[in-house]
Length: 394
Ligand code: LMR
Image (cartoon, rainbow, N blue to C red; front, side, top):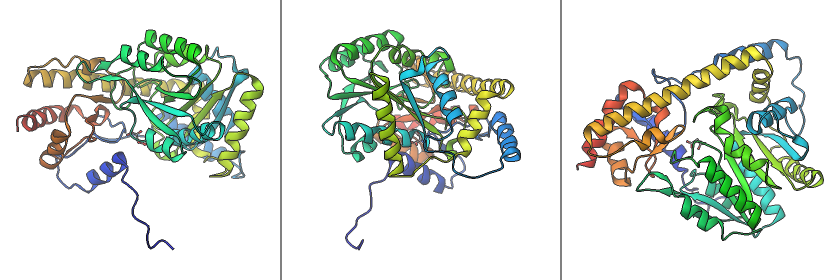
């Protein structure tokens, strides 16, 4: 049956991760996959997660199914976390999903079911798994200008010029914060312009919010999303608890949506539930139950927020030290490293240098030059800067 089948193409992030795992060189640095590591190189379980987990295990008296939409308390808490406490929820529907990838795929399938001819517009560049997910749903994918490789900032004018050409057949994917892979975020002013354009041209905004809390703060990182979602008639949103709750392997995420009326939102949700039923039926409960517990008990919530802001501070310190280390070696301005937000930055390292870093220095970055600063310990910054300096002079 499968004799003529060839292997599927490698996913660049996952393939790099296994390549790095197999590397036995002691000095190796894994700066590929988006996982947070502390100064000791560990990805610890949050204290609040441990505490919530223990009380859940003690209190849980059944493993019966939870329900198609997942944990309803989790869905409500996530809606408030992302859209804000003041959000008027009558048109918003939220569904628990297996990670944000699960949410992206379900929402992509929803778009394809509604309008198979829709065009998905991604930022250039975007998260490497965006295009495969939308293509797997049968959708056409195109890119709008986003990152200016020279200034390492968002090219707002080019972005707005492209988006103003779009119409009701188009879906625009926006990164809620901590842009993956560049680290260059949209300003609030740019969010306002994009909102105006969406209202004027009718394109559908689709927000991917995978790193809330890793930029400035939980509240500030959601500012643009909240501005847009309170003004447009309809939107889609995918979010993840992998990073900000450290629940990577538990696969916890949400798909959120609003239609122009409550009835439209109900139809969207029912389509999403049927898509989930056609695939995995319902999401795993454990991680969502942990998040629901953390967000509903003040002491757990305070502990979680303190740990998250400590991580964010750690990344900001790494950004500062890396900027100094590079400016000390190269005659270039690296101030953008401190302006970028979240785990990632693109420093302008070309593919040849990325490969030389990998083969000669055991330093792993994505081929597109994305660097995970949350994987770089303070003790490794000098080695990274020396290595980059060495390979760029070859
Ligand atoms: C990443 O961008 O490295 C993460 O989001 C991991 C993933 O699932 O791709």
